[in-house]
Length: 221
Ligand SMILES: *[C@@H]1O[C@H](CO)[C@@H](O)[C@H](O)[C@H]1NC(C)=O
Image (cartoon, helix red, strand yellow):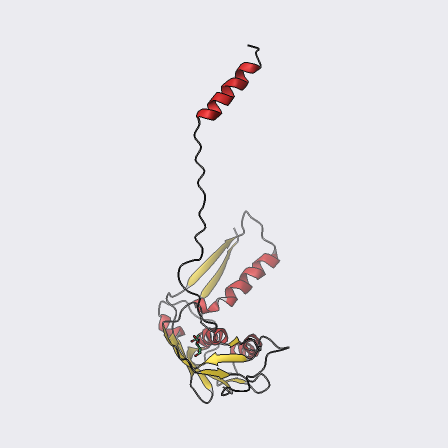
């Protein structure tokens, strides 16, 4: 046997004797559970009374007002959320055969416009949303910050039908954060992150604001 052949043969034998198990990661579709109907808030509020009464929003005639508009956080938020709620600015419209919900009033109890304080008292950021079967909707918030959580949840309740008409179900929601605060730590100390990535992270946090109290920490060591 030539000197080259022997190692080749040994290799072949060993390959044969090794039993290799290939574990397939089984696809488990369809996934368990069922899809939430459109206009379901996420994450689930503490209390959510669902209703089957469907109302419509008229984008040309929709108010979003607050008793705390002297606070810039609220003033900017009402402008911002109006475009999030009426997101389909080109084709979104009112449904012709449904009762119209004329708008939403945001009432803030404590109009202190300063930065929020880290506290374990999650009740400070509680809010309620009332969408009655007729008339305007109302958000009642303890602080300007919980008014933001309320607006985020409200914006998630609006959906569109196949004609692109804005719809919203009558409902009542009462919610408060589960934890005093949550955080995300982006460790950019040894993994340089460009400003753009940091900002993208901030934006994605704000999209899920209704996680209630995200705190962004950027560790720079
Ligand atoms: C809204 O009402 C419709 C029709 O009654 C119902 O099918 C749907 O599940 C409701 N959606 C929500 C989010 O409650």
